[in-house]
Length: 182
Image (cartoon, rainbow, N blue to C red; front, side, top):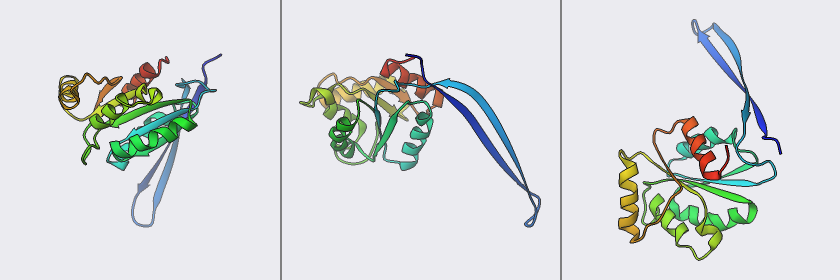
């Protein structure tokens, strides 16, 4: 099967105000060309984005939605809400990807708690979900694994770790790697 492509076009609208009565608008259309999409056309992909800030959730969706074929996006404000949504998402999707912030307020509600709940679930489908951890912590590649081990008394693995500020291409590359697509 051929790789699906999305033809990306960016429209930039600039408004210049000379005074309160006059304004000039210029529109630029930039054709980026054909961009390969991630995922298969015949596969329903659910992406669960977990962050306590709604603006961050919206930003991650915007970064990914043009690249993910047939994706449906789901949102949760913390790890407790996310874990409760997973069975319903699995019932409606062929594959589910979890992107979660590491640090979120609330008892048992952060990304490490969510990861522990996923990896220790009795449901094999939940236990094997791909999880991408997102953090603003400096030195996260060292600190996050130690914190997970300290809090779970086990080696609970995530599939990838991305540090903020997240660059779009970096996030897309990580998602491609986790989903096993190029």
